[in-house]
Image 1 (cartoon, rainbow, N blue to C red):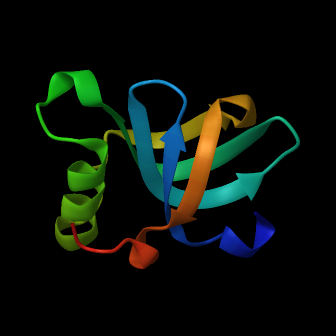
Image 2: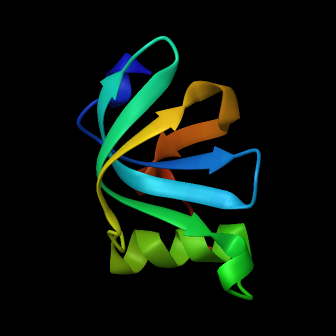
Length: 86
């Protein structure tokens, strides 16, 4: 994951949350993101894929200046720029 430091990433979590933001630190148990969007998919009727694809076009809707994310909750991580349109 170190090669993603400094990149805007999308992180799929085990729960109904998806996280987007700039990856700034990778530690054994957690990741640090800045200017992050921690989005609960229960708050909208859109799918995870559509929310992420829309964010790739419109940008990250920041709701956290700094976010620590437990690695045990992560299902997948990718550059936001690598997201394909739905």
